[in-house]
Length: 491
Image 1: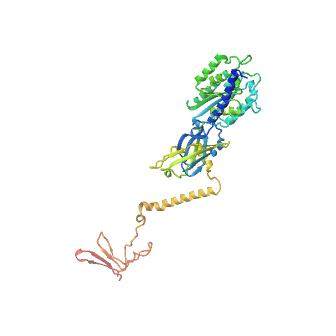
Image 2: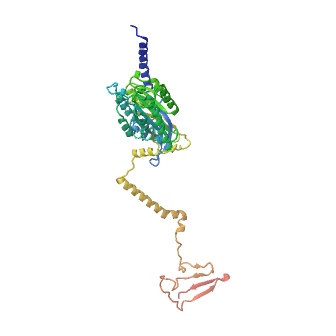
Image 3: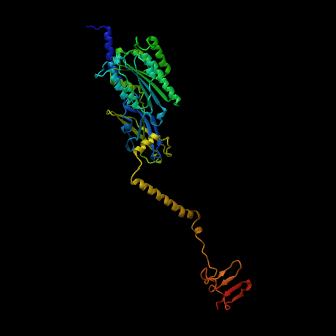
């Protein structure tokens, strides 16, 4: 039996899609770690005098393109990496997905607009409704949200209160608040239609308003990265009883598409459900080039969300301690470290060696200082002692060192400056000597004495003795020199 031509066409298209879809999924599967930022030598003082090394990597496909991957939570991210180098395997003490030291310089602003029309109550594989499956996939997608680097808002749309609901979007940088917005989405109503064109048009306005607020607050034009994600399971449907003035028809599609092109923001359209019920042509016009995705179940929807890479970043910044004790010991070394990432599903990704070649002429200089978050992670890895005998011993050693320093300054520094001879007091000689004659240089008179005369010896405060008449002074000339010799006779 010969099938009609249109049936043959649909059957061939389905076979082609079944072949191409797995190939596309395999092409987007991460198989390696790609180096994003070259290694840098980091000064981790004062926490550690040992030099540190940092680099950035990203999961990538065999073609070298960034690939979607579910990373471990932020608290476990560093432990999932290994770096194999000359001395063995090292675990980085710091890891941050897409943030690193300059996390505040790049802000992902994401607005998710979710269809809650009546058709979202239809079941998908597994027994869940499309709405429940979509909410579960978005919750897993938000697990990769980086707090402080992402701002996310989640709003519903149908055909009632479309403009006011989307304009009331609240952007948050906290994952808990984003999940609360997801749980607060109202259930699809049977009378809800799909104002697809208006939701895209108003979503662009709401996202642009948030970007303008961030720029007025000081963010640079290139620092804010806006993304609009619109998910629907059907096509634009506006009927009686819906909001007045909603974009509709070809003119409405043109206005919404023109808004997307004029905004220059990343706009992602996702069709979820039965392909025949989705206006794929309209979603492609309402999306940025190459940013339309189709998903038939929750798993494919999660893959589509990951491919958008909106609320998660590609790169992962790593920082680790080197085995060398100082920069001097790095001279002439060829530092090569091979990164490895162990994912929760058992997948192991390995990249090419991260290489830092240090010249042998001199010690290398630091490329940058460690950021505060890196220092905090290093302190958590090697906590400073705060209790017990270690503190007492530390303070005792400090006081002992200060005392030794004072002693050195008191006794050793003066001898070093003036020498030992200048520090000794001159010996006080007696005027009268019983052993050797004394000579006065000024008068040239030599005085001889056998003993000190009475009145010139004894204690300092003793009363002087009086000379007797028998004690005479004889003066004799010394020949040609006419010198006077004095002698005392104790007779």
